[in-house]
Length: 102
Image (cartoon, rainbow, N blue to C red; front, top):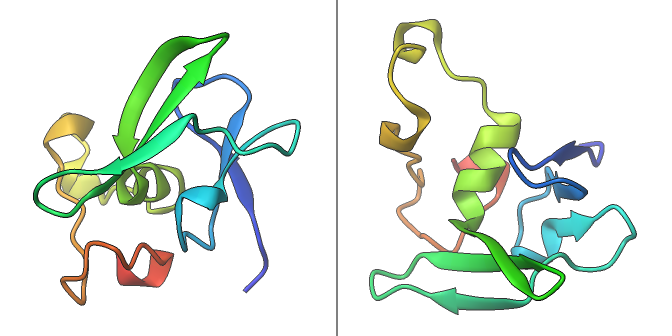
């Protein structure tokens, strides 16, 4: 599979890679990791916080940003707000964020 980078919606200068292996696939356009710190929620979701000039911009799940960038929304779900759509892990392992597992 060819490595592809796509912009993260709503965050200028940050890109996500389609490998989706871990939080290091979130990159700034300068090639540095675009996260300030990572953490796990009580239910096991890996989350990442991005800051710009020391101010928090956004917090999101690794898998959600991958899905939004690389998985098209089927036509029958187009009317549902993005926040209400569910990203499912096929193998039920929330730490397996490979694109082919979402």
